[in-house]
Image 1 (spheres, rainbow, N blue to C red):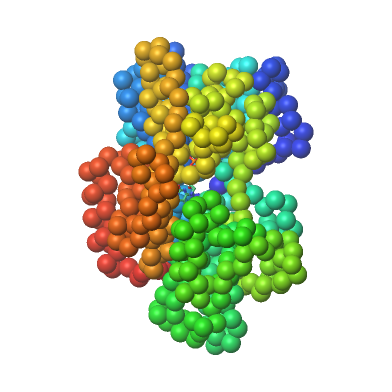
Image 2 (spheres, rainbow, N blue to C red):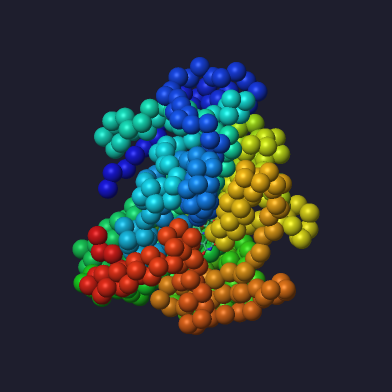
Length: 470
Ligand SMILES: Cc1cc2nc3c(=O)[nH]c(=O)nc-3n(C[C@H](O)[C@H](O)[C@H](O)COP(=O)(O)OP(=O)(O)OC[C@H]3O[C@@H](n4cnc5c(N)ncnc54)[C@H](O)[C@@H]3O)c2cc1C
């Protein structure tokens, strides 16, 4: 598969003045993607859990009826729903079967797709800048481009936050993008083959730093995957010598979720033999070990970094208000305070959680991105076609589900009236977890196509190994 990379040749200097909305247009050069019509142009940057649902809805309404031009910009050509990444990393889910191609989605849903990485903007001229892109052999795929907009929605998600800890960038594997997950899977397979060749004499140590949902779910998936490798012929690996350690600086795993759910998941992981170290602050990652503030050195052939997220750095240079996680501060209509033409949603937005203590913001979750996309699709349509004011976003927390792969799905579902929620597990919890992803696909493809592709996948699955072996 072709991989593209973005180049930021002048990052050191001009990026500082690039985004100043009140400055004259920077003399950067770049190909201007001129307007082809007088229609109002809405650009959504980021085709993730929220952005892709938003452009699909806007395309099906405003785009289809010629009421506005809808554009999606993304730095990749494909979309994968991020909560599936740990399954791709473990090899229990095939990336190729679950990707949505932006160009195909655009054609079916009356919007246009532009490939590129947004690196800055000129707010006064209402233009965004896309960095030049090279393919893996260094050939230019796209030059620097400038795209004018009338309304801009930033939905660029989040990136891994390494908090400046030495060795994270060099030696730990992030799990934030499909290519991270694919590369990690290859590393895991290579490490397993290495152990096999050494007749299983060396332990296979895997450390996961961060015990939020990503770290916890990955730990269970990896436990399952490595045992599958053994059953597919890597039989010199002694399951008793596969050590998975979950390291967290917090007093308990899943710190953002209810205590009862955290305790139930902890018990399940412990019963699988996964070691859980809480209250251990990681201070350094080495090539083959994780070092903690209390002086522990945990051997690790493979280390995964799931220790935190932040919004992409370029957002902090747009002249718009951001918080310390680089999230754009938006009001209850999801509009930025400094610019009425710019909205933000999903992980990159700090939106007020109405009904909670002042200052509480909506958590960075797929369900929040989905709800915000639905609201903004209605809101932009109402504003454009009926001149009505933008409605306010009221986040509804339906609870959380944690998938421990084949072993168990546990969760806490919130009732209609809020309150403490209800613990769920077993088949019902598994169905609900599965349904979350299907719901995303239904927004993108419609119900009938989701059922057709489900049937196709079930047939294909019966001829494939349970884990990806390449
Ligand atoms: C492993 C993992 C498991 C998770 N599990 C769950 C879960 O079980 N439940 C849950 O609710 N949430 C879960 N989350 C969180 C959830 O995935 C995110 O909250 C959600 O994807 C946020 O949606 P978004 O649209 O804001 O951003 P994303 O889905 O991250 O999409 C951002 C998009 O922007 C594009 N982009 C980024 N920068 C640029 C740029 N400069 N220019 C152009 N394009 C750009 C990216 O390519 C991407 O397509 C999980 C996250 C991870 C990593």
